[in-house]
Image (tube, rainbow, N blue to C red):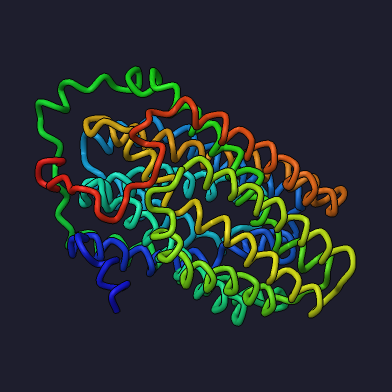
Length: 420
């Protein structure tokens, strides 16, 4: 109970509302995300290469819209921008059952990409404005918990419902996803966001100010690699498991759930463990762990099939989760601490664009490799992750000393009203 009290201490009720809405939204994402490529390939007959290209195109749109989203956040607020992104995503995934040809997937994933461009900087800026600096690592760790809890529960439900022999099951899943986007938007109507003082907004230097921050640009560049060869490569595990190792949809849902349960259980203890410790060292360790997880997947696909392979993949996703719980309290709080209040939306927009760019690069590389020689995917991911680990340690020397370590639990608080 003392640990729970520690987590709740200093977090406004509005933060918990945002987190609750995030769980609902992430549930919908979890329902469909593991099965997107399976739906396009196995139900609609769209090739791996075309499916990967469509996913990459959606991410490219998110990347292209990201700059505008950052400006909108700094002018209209994180909450309003987030609501707009949720509505766009609801429309996109609500129409997904209508896909019959690759070009239709491109259009709807592009619309979803526009929603993503507004979603992440809006949500991250809203949470930063609602929380004092000493508690931000806790808030972003909770954000990771809520996201993974929702996605894990969604993944297991999706695995129980989805059947390539019955395309109507995918229609139900996509409509359910659309409803959860709208549910999160409704919750946000109850949240009041602190506003940036008009004088600070007038003093903002726009993206020119952001682009002069070279250490921040280094953080952004590394995150592109984290996403492309970490998250996005593991996003290809479901089709790899089904079509290479013969794992059925229900086991795929269990694979997703195992990763989620591990993160939900360990994220907050990991957040406390990281307090006062070096942020870039944590991100370097994350990459080493991800490399190990990729090699475990490779072994599972080469030496096992069906249930045995599924159990190996479950172990691999748990190992991958170790890296995720290191990133959760680190990445978002580091960006928030590097960003001046007046342009925080733009900082988070560029950070979100790094996720989008990684989401372009990952499927663009991984999709064709999966179709050509699936087993090459995992040593490729492992090698790049190890290179990224070295990059983290090099960048650490260039960060301001004040942001190199995660804030301690007893750090002095900055009043939320003053920060806003």
